[in-house]
Length: 244
Image (tube, rainbow, N blue to C red):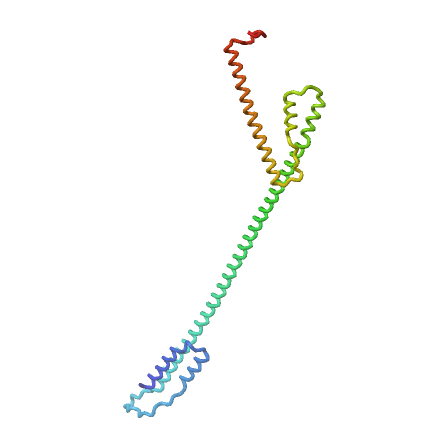
């Protein structure tokens, strides 16, 4: 292998590994490669006169060309590496910006959801308070009405009888009888469940009385029908104010 081939092989190996080195290391290696090398002590070939070739000049020009190409490759490499680093920095910045935007969107969304849940809870609490207040008012009104009915119904009938000072009618007798049969209501100190039970008992009593009233009215209708039927059968009737 000639000296030129050896130098080319060294340049090729240097070109392979220069990308892994820093710029200072590359320059140091380049200076090492370009150091003067003592030529081997060989007998020069015999060349006829007039055909002499300047191999030193050829070798020098080739070395200059290779050195220039190597410097160009080094510059291109570091320029590309600089661009890659800038792109990497820009990519990191974009990733960080997107991460910040996603975090901000999630924060705003969480705040909106929290506000919505708070509004729902407040609305539910307000409705519960309104329902509780309405129920308390209704219970107080019912309690007042029931208490007034128990305390004043009997006295009202007595005063009505004293004002009239005459014979009681059937309706008045009925009211008087019901007032005497009614038990006084003592609901001032009753709890809610006791009031509900008392109201249910009163409802059952009213339902039973209405049922008996309905049966009695049906019985009266039946009796009237039988009376009319008997009159028709026996030929009795009232004509001109006289019974026939």
